[in-house]
Length: 99
Image (cartoon, rainbow, N blue to C red):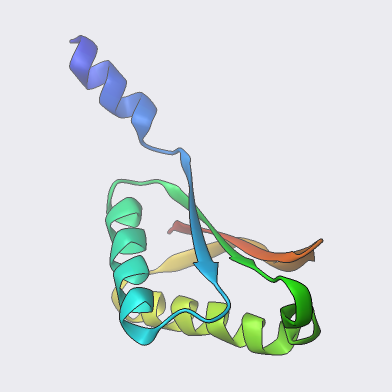
């Protein structure tokens, strides 16, 4: 019984996924697979892209990278964006969950 109760508590957590501005395409695919696994378990995902130095000037490119991840996820899952893309200091974040 305790294990079942623990599994119920584990689902619904917020999992953080951090990506860099200069992430390679294969690394991006790996992150997307990790996000898919978390969504299957029923977790919410906070995708965070950290900008440093000159990268802060290129927020549009950073938002495009996050939108690319979201579009790839929409092909396999019905995702719900709980908190839209938002710049918080030197980070751009979005919170998603499975519908």
